[in-house]
Image (cartoon, rainbow, N blue to C red):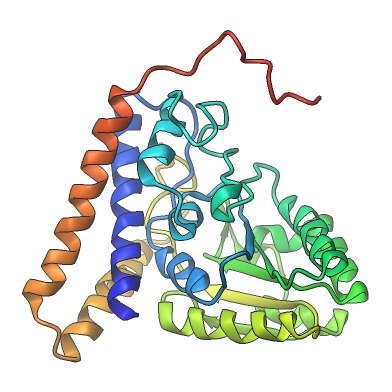
Length: 312
């Protein structure tokens, strides 16, 4: 499993780096929100779920999509506005979804995915389909009313939904310490009468074990849970963010504990040959390079039916 974690994390990291490169070249237009440094959350969480479960992410959702199994060439093509994109180039970086892979989409409104995820979980309860819904959001979203409403609703109806807080300690440009009195966000679960847990979000195995445990409980009818996963992003909040708000030395320290380097060191300590680890890295980089070339060769999104799938 650990090698699979490393493979997934490399694929996410290299895809985000490729997206950055394409954005600099203006092949990709508009704002993009990257997840470099948070890859263990996505790789681990999906390992703890089952086929048929559903994932709702934030606007920083590329990593969730890759971990769900969405083909990277279709993700990159989507960001380029290509017809071969997973939403035919209409969703872009912050709005695409891929239900065929269990990825029910991003949401650019902070915290707004959680109430929708509760609807998904309620549907599972009514259908008795055994599916668990996972909804992810940042630490900043913990102060949004929609998150409170969603947790209260899910707790009252005992819904099979996992609330995942990706705590990278910044709400856009604002440190968590400047927005809350108690930074232990998982404790808020107590007020809803649901389990709350805080784990190291840079440890993919710890994430997988935690998600699997709470997902199984939800499947057994024990209701929702809040899992706070601590991490650090290695890039700005958005493309072009100079990160002047971060204290001196913070980013350098975060790079020392970033999940890919940590997992490589752990695997090497278990006796995995460096050549094997290098091969995983090389294969992932090659896949992303080839995916980007395929996306670049694809035609732009068609305009003759651009109003299809618009409902408001």
